[in-house]
Length: 379
Length: 182
Image (cartoon, rainbow over all chains, first blue to last red):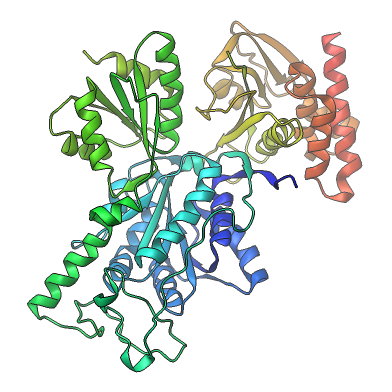
């Protein structure tokens, strides 16, 4: 049977990806350019017995997502820079309490209310360091309508598997543009559910690491009862200041993502003509599409240029970028901000090759010609 | 080389030009099986202001989703003509609503004139279908998709009660342009 196809916006594809992954709850507050995510879910969730709530603000929306997730459901919120800023305290809470949830961040110009209808990529560091304290972060950066669907499914899978908040960050251009999408059949993409406790309620501890770096999570409303707090806690969930607990908790929560085992299940990159490349363009989101256009044009001119596109933005693809840094003459980083991911590239390359940044923040996309000119500056 | 065809619809916010772009993209990708991307830019106003919608159609996957230099452009208002009728390819085409665009943009492209809003109001019967009149005319002018694919996409978008109105609007725009082209 032919697959169901449609022409739809990235934001609409995001909502359908969430439903495919088994999302049953959306708590949000509307904001351009993310609102279509909630519009679709407000229609679709009630049909499948799910819940849609528009809260009084973004902070409450994030709180509702955390609460709903603790009852065992897969939960989503969607917003943009200013709203994501408001959610930060609760995102940190979801990090330390280890509550699975997905946050869609559709990037416009900033800071503050900035340029609501224009595209930006200046919230990529926010996706990593927006909330305070040491913590791991997972952020995915799709670049097409189809990929927004699949990466939203993957975001839910990673949230459930690693028991933590996961962000999907994409710019207004991919959020609002329309492309053809082919809907995967049920079962075609893997859907992961969180590990449930195997011990009886009386023995259950929500942070029992004898089950590994990601302890099973019981659902409120079942016979399991436990304590949830934003304070550092002992395995039973109650607050503690005992040095050995606090240190072990902090390190485990970072290790579960940034450790070698964690990374292997999270990192995802797309490389185009990098094998023989002398210059690499590092680009994500809609900018990576301009970059791919530029690579094809530059190849016609005889220049050996390739594209590295991180689909997982956080954790940062350290090993591969370090290796590419040793292979090439230079790495060019175009992004719609004044210098964010280029700092990560520089950090990892450690001076093995020059890193050239191309930033644009006037509300217009970086076009292929601008990238070609920047690549030609490489000596 | 793969063929990349770029069309821009521009006018005032609320004139339905984003919808016209969506319909064209649906005709190209869902009905004709080509690749298409539709994008738009607009200001914070819900109505008014200059608005544009761009469609890129190609026989291979489309990387850069925005227009580079457009093959064809529609301008329904003076403001949109001033703002968006630049960047038309050498030898490209521009269609203007001749009642509203008095200062014709100059460039290395051919300008076509039709009283689009007036046609919608007086000939078809409702101003609201001016975008479909314009779409019919743009498809006749560019051959971006077949006449049938365009019609099918229009009809699949509109509510039952407005099917005949839109069918008429599309045919009027298409035929009027064919007459101009001779």
